[in-house]
Image 1: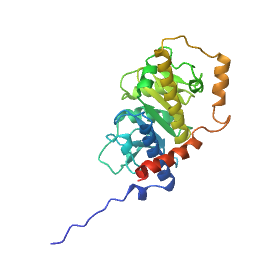
Image 2 (image 1 turned 180 degrees about the horizontal axis):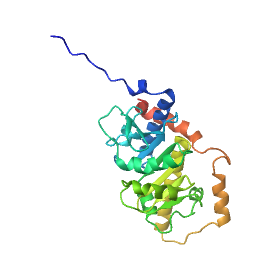
Image 3 (image 1 turned 60 degrees about the horizontal axis):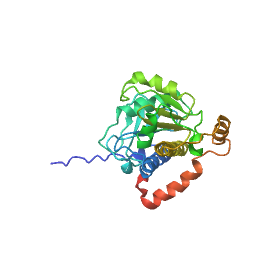
Image 4 (image 1 turned 180 degrees about the vertical axis):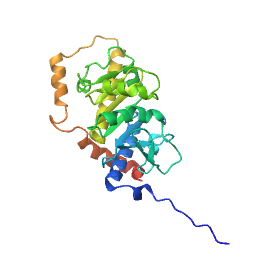
Length: 260
């Protein structure tokens, strides 16, 4: 009796371009860093990156992994409608909310390579404050007049919400989803992570300051605008790039498996 032939599935690394693999490694690193800095929500939330090459494909996490488990090989490649065009080395699928939110932004904003969405404690707290993000600190002033607000429309699985998300984000790279959480986007993965890190820190500082129950000082509109302008891309440097190399060195020391 003849033995059945053994068919070995090609590894993801062998099925993608060098440029896509580098994007996969950076995106996996971003997931690990979001976890490292305490911005995860179990297996929920998403970080997406546009695949280089012009085919309008995105990389997204498989729905079922914790962020510290994400690797370059277990990211799915999907189209803007959420169809998997290259399945990762996993049995997990994707979360519909991932492509409803992220797909809408990637489709509307061709300058955006990466989108991060979180449900952190501080981010959710500020999202529920009618005042929104206040310019209380230098960290928050980088978002002065540079952040959008999107009213809550229930769990983000309805495609009808997509044009509202795009409208409310507008030209900005940061968005507070009311009663929900935070979102940042950028031209690179490092830039997008940097924005989310500092937006999260701004929210934490605001929650702490308001909880102190003391009179707070507020900078003038002129100082708020001057400070925000100094953080605009191109004014001094692209924030996130210099920090990224340092953070990758830290990940490689702690656990380099994100590169697998």
